[in-house]
Image (cartoon, rainbow, N blue to C red; front, side):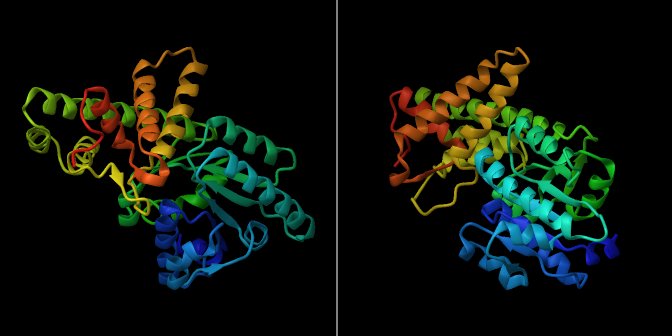
Length: 326
């Protein structure tokens, strides 16, 4: 396993909050096994400074990553950015394949949370000339979990070989654990959206309970103490309650939310489209989405960053309270 890791040339595209944390874990491992430095690109190069300090190197465009690397990790914020970047990468790979004497497919690892149709598009693009192996591996967990190496990777692929190549990098390095779902490449993105619909539903329920506790006079703090007694601090329910009762769902303009409300809305809409596509009327998800969108409208980006638990603020306003306790 270590021999494979030390020989492969690894690339990383996308160094946002989650991407930077995961790339940093991978670079530390490469340092431990004397592997080649991680080859990185980010739209804002200076944001990659922490991983460069660990030993990674930055290049000027995604094409350089594609041409230099055997395995490319790809972690961007939305479907449009993912498609734009991958279109350039695939063009570079086709040029690279034309120049190679020994045919060995590059493996693309898509870590972004995107609609399954985007993964299907990518698989179709590479199938035309067998240009690359595709591994879809969205991750479960917060920014804090990413920093601590506690993510769960959901993994599906176009072929078993690509999954086998990527597995050593995912389990225990980029993520704490990996759940392998087979060779239907869209399964990982489907499961990620199902899981996100569950988490948004939990957030909605906890948010409403906090507002109810405050309105009836029990108090939000008392409810949080009850939750603390019933659930472990590692649980999603406890973490959401903690963010609500502390007011962490609204942060300064330069703050770093645990799960930005814009991304929660994007993921929620993808999940709703997935449900609609199979004839399911997902009322709970619709309600959560409406509160997320109301929260974003209540606090413009110019006034602060919002976490997904900001739906509590929207429910507070609907109930005659201020968006956040001051």
